[in-house]
Image (cartoon, rainbow, N blue to C red; front, side, top):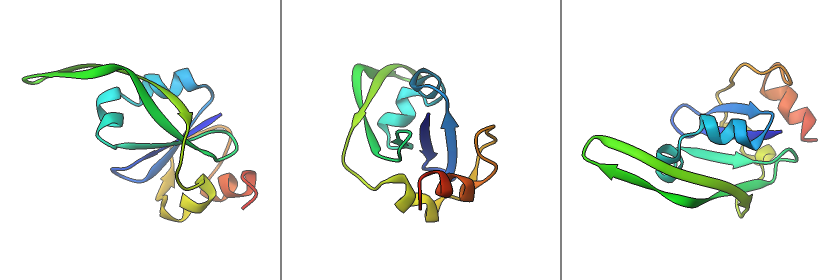
Length: 103
């Protein structure tokens, strides 16, 4: 399980796999700081780009990344900023995520 927080609207998303997460969170948005990430225990993850984002005029492509352990706030510390939880079968609301993380 992986967590991603959209910096635009502060919605928290839950993904069953890292592949589902990286498919949803586009590289160009990740590169520009549009997402924050955590693993199943709430430890922060940082993107490392294996293929750079290419911008040519109005076309943006590429931006392949992997997530690695990184520095930053644990998810339980960040939950107070979350405005809502994107629909997920694992959790009904942000409070359920807090309980899962032991906070």
